[in-house]
Length: 94
Image 1 (cartoon, one colour):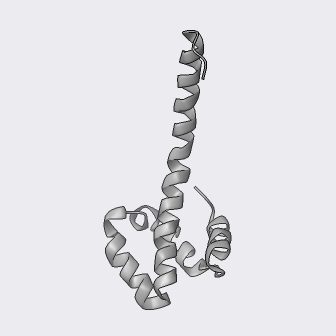
Image 2 (cartoon, helix red, strand yellow):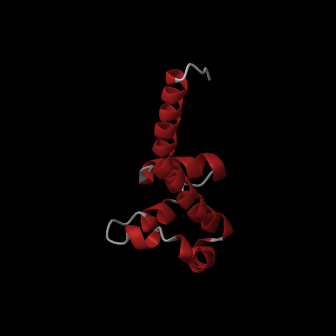
């Protein structure tokens, strides 16, 4: 998963704002697991929207999406490597 700094850089590229307060809030070590709970997206989105505006609220959701991608991307790569290995074993080419 990206670091707070990386999340902020991505936000800056996407929106021209760092939204550091959003990323620091989500990744606070004492609350990180509960703040990544996707079942709480509606109320947390509204909280950020009320406090920092629509753009910040969208960056909250994007942060979660980036973390999901980061968390599971290595699994996709591992599975693809196994598929490629098995295809080679059976004489098939990709």
